[in-house]
Image (tube, rainbow, N blue to C red):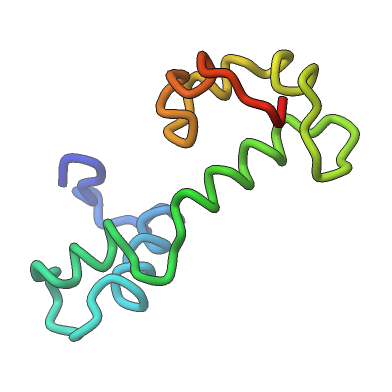
Length: 102
């Protein structure tokens, strides 16, 4: 009700319908109409999702200007703000260390 209260009795917005479908299809695994501890854990830390790999792919995708799947020193430096804001670089801390690959 904090995000959407259908007081007029009109149709629900598309985002509400989508969220209901997401809940029914993917979040409420035991179909009891609510999320228990295990369902929340599965949602927050899914076993089939590699956060580090996803973040690394995101950084390469956003920074690889020539789309050769390799980052040059210039591509990293041109996108330094993305790297220092990334968990993959320990929020920039790892960028201050010497790296042979750069």
